[in-house]
Image (cartoon, rainbow over all chains, first blue to last red; front, side, top):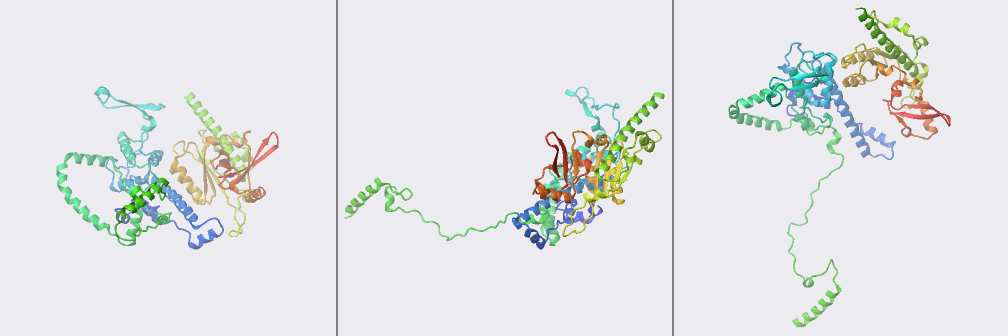
Length: 332
Length: 235
């Protein structure tokens, strides 16, 4: 498990632009070994109806299933690892340490809301607050014993029309998941950011697009935006320029390692998928000559409206014969 | 104060009785699967159980209730694959079974399952059965099945309160050995995929600890034919 540590320093550096380190490392480690050419041939010999194409498709599906299993294992590993954070028993859930924050966020990218619920349940079972970065115990025995629901009163003036207090009726087990209302808010703020799509079906760029933000970070950002739009505006172009130059430098593919990252980023994790299932060959249409087509010219038989797909109506045939006769006479 | 004590002892008595029934079903289950179980163990009475496994307060002590059993020769035959070219001398795919009752009354998660997996992995145990009082978390279920080369099963105590296979409407399920299975397929000229199927999550399949690919013979009473046998392929 230690080899798949969420944020080992050298790994996080290498994959700055690409997939989160966690998933990338697993994909590299478990490079699904295809059977060798010999094995494939031997397998096909015993089955007269099967072709190598069938085998290829079967292998591809097997790999997909394997990828799913691996991803599920990974999520389980992360769930168990995250039970041990925060590392210090008196950490502040509002201001977690950078390491904890980092490992929490990287793990959360892989989770679906359902996995997150399991994770909360798991934390509650080990008597911890459901919010991953909180070291406190969860509340027990909220309200009267034996009651399934609990009344939660809001602040004065929070009721309808600004009068009285608002009342929420909350199931007790929902309250007992957290140590405080603040932690509940923090934890649920994480939950709404998770993607419903499972990791093994996500494309690399989709995984990359998921940026988990803690509630405190979100609030700080919002305040900054409100406070000083003028000051930030002056510095923006500079940073942008610097970003662009850095980005252009990053564009080059340095060696095999970077190209592998690129393949990952494009979602080409399965080697067989790189060529695709269907053999597609692009071929340009060859033009016979470069001259433009000639404009149509009036032929003598078109004078009477011509033929209908090669058929000339009989009446018209007679007429035209008469005409021709006359015409010739005229000419003479 | 007096009333309090009697309430406690009543509670303890109730729990002991329930657990005793579960405990007996576990032994019956082991015997039905083909493990070596003595007659004394099978017919343990409530008094004996109370003497052996209750703590000073009168409550049952689940930490004491650990069971280990070895497979019988018959069972070993049933679990030995047919010799093939690549494997001319197959070994039986079964071994010591270990049953553990989890003492925690609620919230059984990965922590307890990890401890259980540890015991199973370290002590050269082939099959482990983990029995809890409450449902275990989804991650714990995954963790339980993630141990390579070992089989870990999970039951809740209430699932084993009564022995379902002793119910009159549940027909007799007999596991076929690989040889019997191949003879069956030969006789009816079938592929195994052409047999009727049964899920591994089926209550009886779980009770018998069936594995994917095995075939069971189901013997029913029939009004017209006396006895009627059908077969199920476990998937």
